Image (cartoon, rainbow, N blue to C red; front, side, top):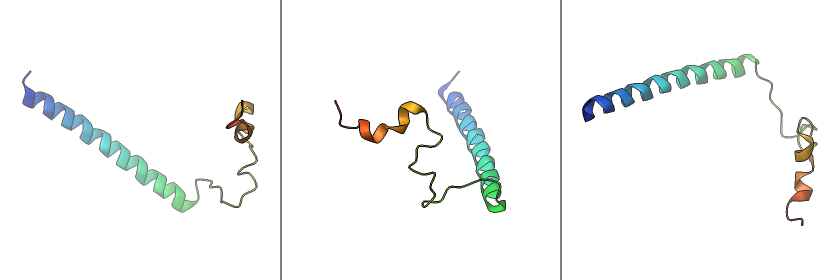
Length: 67
C-alpha cells in the first residue's frame, strides 16, 4: 500500500465518523426541542444533594484535602 492510499482510507473513516456524529447531534437537538430529554436546572434540589451518586462519591467534598 502506498502512502496516498492510506491517507485516503483514514480520511474516509474520519468523514464517516463525522457524518455519524452530525446525525447523532441533530437527533439530540430534536429531542431537546421536543422535550424528550429531561434537564436539571441550577436551582434544583437534586443538585448537590448527592442523589444518584455512588456512596463513595456522596461525601467527596469532605474528603478533599483530608488525611
